Amino acid sequence: MEVSNTAILTTVANFELYNKTSILFPEGVQKYIIDGRDGMHGIHSIVYMMHKLKNKGIHWLIMADEDVVFTDNKLVFSLIDKMNNNSITVCGVRDGGAVLHRKKNPFAINTFFSIINLKDVFDIWNKKEVLKNQYIKEGEFHDDLSELKGDFDSKSLYEPYYCFYFWLRRQGKKFLFLESKMCDDMIANEVYCENKKLLCHTWYARSYGVNKKHTDRINIILNANGVENNIEANLKDVILFKKQWFFIQKRIKKYYKYLIMKLNK
Image (cartoon, rainbow, N blue to C red; front, top):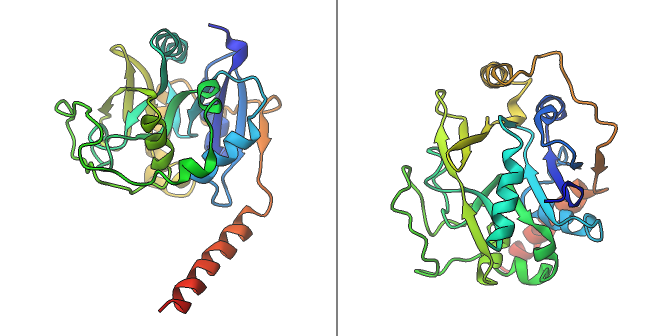
């Protein structure tokens, strides 16, 4: 595969943690950041991503949160080869049943880590249609969920970004769901590619440097993977996107919806 048409994107709420974990990101790919400190995340981040990355020549987009610690970043390229050879558009971990404390919808992924055939998605992208897909039909998807070790809710609409993945599935796009195992702390989870450990997802990125329990827990995982507390990535080649006035726009929309509800009572 060509590394030149592959990029990695992180919506960052905690830059202190990103400065450490991004050292372990796959090498040779362009790094992008969406500044998430003002509440930009989820479906808002996905829509903004599709706007900002248009015409960038990206075929494969790796999406990884700042609390993802890659343990074998070369496996990412093996995954992309597998996706390319099997016409798979999205890979990731189910948001229900795969991580024991995530009991949400197993037909969508959790966005902490995924790989997307962005070229494939751009070919059919329609923001308005995507946002209409935040619903689930009984028996619509036929995944074999019998091997899932955790609980899940196949009717859950917990995450507003589910619409993006439901839309892709309704467009006939293929998904590859990755194996996940819980770590010893029963909070972090490991993700596997063909029985090889690809990464560890620590969870609670926003708590790093704020909450001692989670900071100490995450530092143990960082240190186990060769990231010392005083080591930080060089961010000079990272491209940063920040949507101006996003927080204010969000507050205005929220207040507008509140007024409409009051008027309709």
